[in-house]
Length: 148
Image 1 (cartoon, rainbow, N blue to C red):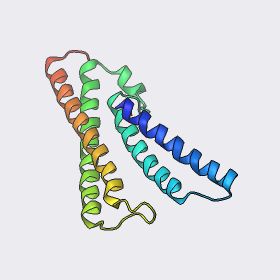
Image 2 (image 1 turned 180 degrees about the horizontal axis):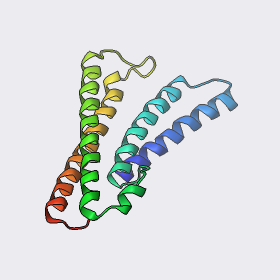
Image 3 (image 1 turned 90 degrees about the horizontal axis):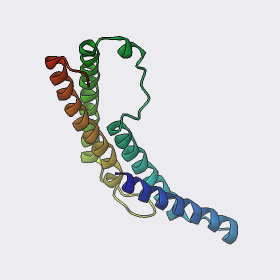
Image 4 (image 1 turned 120 degrees about the vertical axis):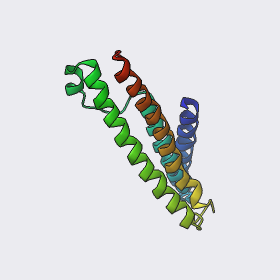
């Protein structure tokens, strides 16, 4: 996933740089570069969010969990994962509704809006799948009483 993020970031930098150079040297903005940069940024955000979630790199307040016994901590983790699964389900459903109703294309590049909208659904699906796996792991650790 890191290679994909790096490739999107490089493409984003090239797109923004092309627009800056076009404005500075040619006194002419490149409309396609601005639109492409927006699309790449949206994809970068959602892929980055999924990657950060998979690596436990999102900000978390864990002072309470660190003070609990392992079994109680895993119960809290299970609740956390169940909430995340529910929220990702809502995002997947909402994203599906948006995708099913979206028929337009972007103004300059003519890219279907669904290509942009699907990034939300893919991100939520990935995070939901990881949360399901973590919830299952928490249940297993609660049953056995082991530490993670």
